[in-house]
Image (cartoon, rainbow, N blue to C red; front, side):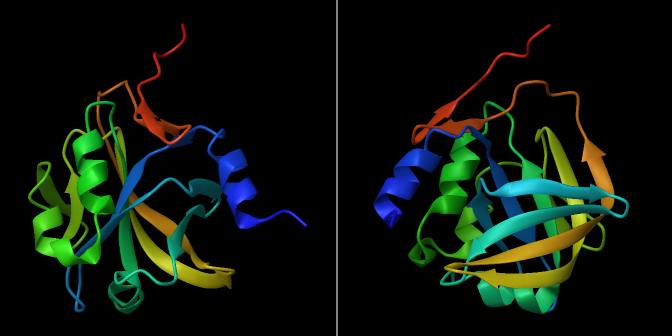
Length: 163
């Protein structure tokens, strides 16, 4: 049977876009860095986000029921790092990195991100150590930025667009 260390080493070779997932609402603001984000369907427009069940952010997201997927631009590695820091840094400190605006009733959207998706969580499924948050997209905040941030072999990369 494959062990967790071997699996993580294999998955490090899968390039992933880097996102900061944010929320705001009755339970307050929250956010975390995620690379396990993908589209599910376009009808209705739905994405999934994987969140560690041990995260101190879990209850905030569950109680707010909304989130914003901020797909990071190539120059936003500092934002990723700020939102991947341990809980002792505090949520407010995380939002000191980057420039933020509010969309859809107060959801934090990162200025200069490739795209931000304002979403409602419609279903949560527990799988192993993570919760998978299925979320319907209510609004897309696009930008002219063309270079994204990618995580590959445990490092940030800035791929150049082809064509």
